[in-house]
Length: 369
Image (cartoon, rainbow, N blue to C red; front, side, top):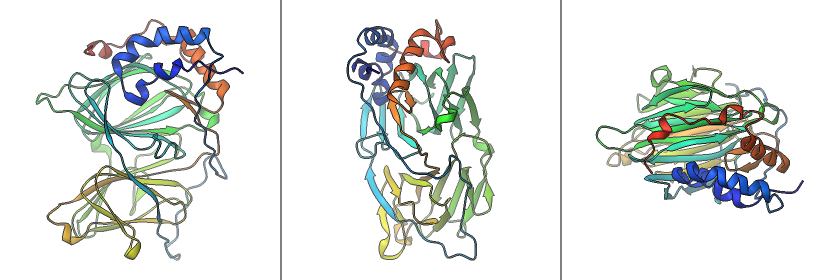
C-alpha cells in the first residue's frame, strides 16, 4: 500500500512537542491534505523484540536460589526542552537515545505552567499511565468520561481502537506548575481493537512498605515489593511501577520478574545502582536501563550523602512484546497499512472514532491561545 504524506509529521508533532495550539488549529486541514497525497513517504519506527508468550507467568526467584543482580545496559540524562506553550519536558524513552524499549514507547517528565495544556487529541493502540507528582490535571473524553487526578494520583488510560480526549492542568492558586510523569505502553496486537477505558488510582489507595530501618520507602503502585502487592487490573500489558525513596545510608534489593524489560528514572538526589565495583552513581533526571539477565535491582544512597539528602526514583518493568511497533504520532499499530487505516478512521469518524465527529471538550475550551 502506498504510504502517507509526510505532512502528518507536522500534524502530530504535538505529540512530540506538546504544541497544543498547533494541534487544535491544524489537524483538520492537514488531514485533508494528506488524504489527497498519500503517495508520499511514511515515517515509521519499527522494532521487533523477543518474548516466548504474550503474557508469560510472572516468575520471581525462590528463596533457595541466589539472586543475580541486574547490570546497567545504558544510562543517560533526559535533557529538558521547551515544548508547546509554557511546557517543559524531559523525554527519555521515545528519543534518539532510546527510541523504543518494548513494551514502553515513551516516557515524559513534564512541567506545565499556567496557560498551557493538552486540548482535544486522539489516540489508538496504546495505554498511557499518568503519575501526577505535583498539582492537579483534569481529563475529559468524547464518551463523556471526566475527572481530576491530584498530587500522588495516577490515571491508566487504554486507547484501544480509538479515543479522543483532553488533558488540562489545573491553575494552581500559587501559580506553581503541574509536574508529573507520563508513560506510554504498547498494547498486544490482539488487544489494539479493544474498547477504550480509564482507571484512576488515588494516592490513598497505593500501599507502601518501609525497609532498612525506615531508610527506604516503596510506594507499590503496580507490582510487588517485599511482601506488599499493589491494586490489581490496572493495565492490560503487565507493568510494575514502584516509587522508591532512599535516605542516606539506606539500600534496597528489589526483585523483578525474570526476562522483563526494566528501567529506573531518577527524580531527585543521587543514587547508586548496582553493588561493589559495579555500582554506578546516578543523579537526577537520568534514565537507567537494565539488562534483562538477573533477578534483582540493587539501589543505595551512601551515608556520606547526608548533606545532599534523600534520593527518589521510579522503577518500572514490563513484559516485552514479540511484535513490530509502527508508531505515528498518537497512533501505535503493527503495520504501515494500519497507520494509514488509523488516519482514515480518524478523518472519517469511523471504526472507533465515531463520537469524535463534532465533539469538543469543555476543558479544552479554556486553553489560552
